[in-house]
Length: 267
Image (cartoon, rainbow, N blue to C red; front, side, top):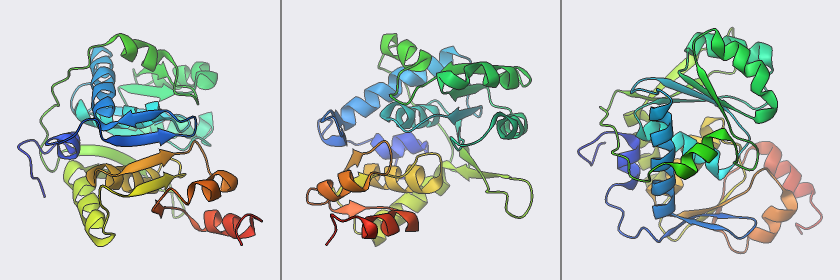
């Protein structure tokens, strides 16, 4: 599936970008982030990850609320050759202890409100800790704001790991499913093709980004197609109904559709 000299998912997503001013993300406050902005922000954050000791193959665990900075953290981790490990924001400290001790990340990124508890867990595996709050601010973005935008994307092979997703644990203890750069790229290429995504599409992105649907499907597919997304911090039926006239696609889960059908604005 690799169409670039570097199999790194970041290279596949952004190499050959014809227009860095193309809109990638729009937020509810009207702020607009271009593809060029995403590349620059990912470069700054990747430089911080390397400064914090993240080496190719190291895991970066993230339990953060949805924000553009959290999405940039994913892109920066992959760009730096790391392995991204998103963690459900509802996990308790007891649950996090299992995931962190099992995955042994080099770095854990968390909400400042959970910093002290997570620091104690991270110390057991020698992991450093940085913060990102629900608005995308924290020690990680403060450092990134001062870092250089240029970053040489780390070369990766097709089968090198890009991410780990833990299973739901319905049939036993959660297990880390290992996803390679080629896994994520081939899945996205297939969906762009089957769903006929184009650079004219506008996605209402209301899914969380700690699981595969919101992160690896919605985000990757949009970026591969050079489309754009309206990035909502959470599912908001009223906001979604207002945005539908401007969008071409919405991705959801059954509860989304049930709540939309119950909304008086849908007639």
